[in-house]
Image 1 (spheres, helix red, strand yellow):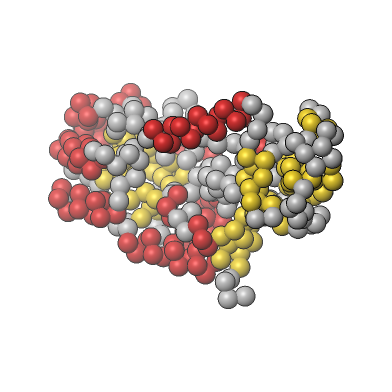
Image 2 (spheres, rainbow, N blue to C red; image 1 turned 60 degrees about the vertical axis):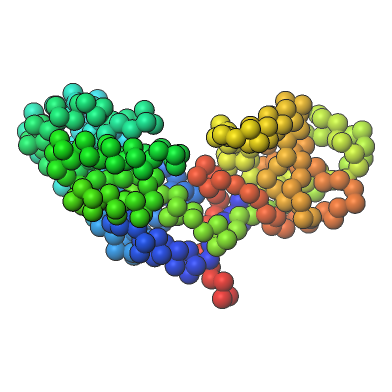
Length: 349
């Protein structure tokens, strides 16, 4: 099938998953969004095979997607919104844990008829969701009227000061009410040490490191759809751009709908990284952008911005053009990529 395909060494991938689970205390796999490129149902099936008891999804709507495959407990990471009818309904589901990040919402759940299973999120320096540390004492009495499952602490990925922040927030939380700690973005050894230090159970939520941590065990390719010879001065593409020289316009499967040409804002923190981002942005402003497709051993320039489901890439004279139907390597971030096919195989084949 023509398209963008990931080929995964299934044995190697599953060995990597087992290693992460073995090294990390009480892993809660994160299964959300588009399933890290593999799909929610596939990841839910892996969690069932691995024998984990709890997974975390992003949205209330994702609970139903995984429920037919995974029958254990499901944490909803998005904070509870009382205006969301599905979120309200799921508070009564015995296998669902609802994350609460505002005092008023916790009060509402505590005053309700049922006893929902609740995780209370503590605000970290991310400033995304959660009760402020000075609000935790007010939350403590409300926990008598829900099934309190613990404190959720979603830490920033920045390593500097992260361990100290985790300890400070965790200590404040368990002083308000003793309960398990559910932690994100903290190394396994630090998760384990924090639990031992405070005398509470700990759970480690893991997503990218679990599903995408072994990059060498997979390849992503795109199908060549067409190859057209061009001469210097000729035009091609939607915008009729002048080709930069003699060579070929190679039409490759993979466009914006697959995540080609899309990227998150730069996370550059050093001057070198910022300079690289500035140089890349300057090339883009000048109408030049390096594509993620490798043709004849090198990444090649886009002829123009990628289309919805395909891209036009310029291959200069002197290179060896691919044939229609060939598969060429493409570098994509699977956290934002949408694939046409996932093929499971073995390195022994």
